[in-house]
View 1: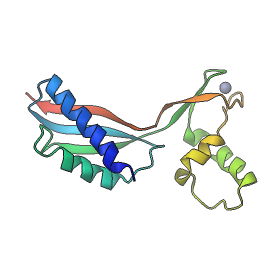
View 2: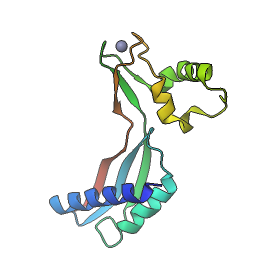
View 3: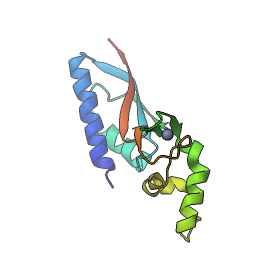
View 4: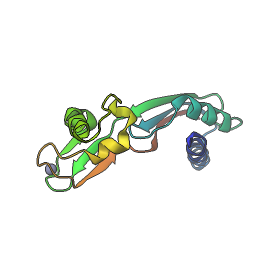
Length: 142
Ligand SMILES: [Zn+2]
């Protein structure tokens, strides 16, 4: 899938950051993987390690952490997680889709279409986190 290109943009951002901050050797990097980012983490990590060879991150520990998705209502400003609306989303999907055995985390895009604000029922909301990949922290020695 797109693990290679995601790893490439992460590696580019990391190396860029190291240059800007004059980092000679990073010891640990924590990367947040959004809940809605459908990637094979193992493949992504292997690509990333490969691309960081010979860089200041060569021997750094690469940690991937799940970044939970959060929605925010544009009408009432309430914000919520996917867990909070999971049951309702599954219920809504099951009304329209016959095969309801597929776990919801395999269906992030479909699930999104069935999300409504738990407070005011609006479909006018934004995703404020849990999409894409973010570099959460970099530990390094001077
Ligand atoms: Zn609302």
